[in-house]
Image (tube, rainbow, N blue to C red):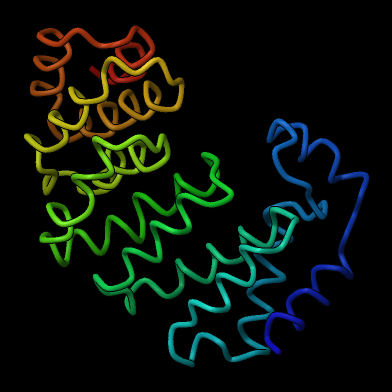
Length: 219
């Protein structure tokens, strides 16, 4: 029922003219309704208030229903809901988040899921790192590998430096742009907290030039 309410709201604001450049920006991987981010957030906020969904139990079915919709704004709305539900996430939700990372995968969804909900769960329940994220870092799925590199992005002084560097070393031979970019991004963020460590790591490790360029921006 709640899904239909949100779909009706979004459909009322469909704009095919705006959708075209949005689709082009995302390399035409997904169709769009043509609802830009500020307007979408306003509509989703309206939906949250009118539906009361944030006052109910965490609804994985609602997220999955949005994930199945064609237009990308529905996945963004699912992530908006997920971000508002962070305090209700527990370690048993990690397989569900893995499902989201590995379906309709692209940087725009993965780069929210990895450092925010995955990062929050791993911060509260560090055992999930050995239980699950270890396999992400060394597995075949590019977006799980990117997620393993990025899940500590917001940890700052709480970053497990050894773990971060180990995941980077495991992936440094990758020719994948999104892996090389993730390495650089993770190093750049951590350099804001520990520039000397990042500088020493970059100088002592044979990294892709893209990763070095991105990781060195603040050091």
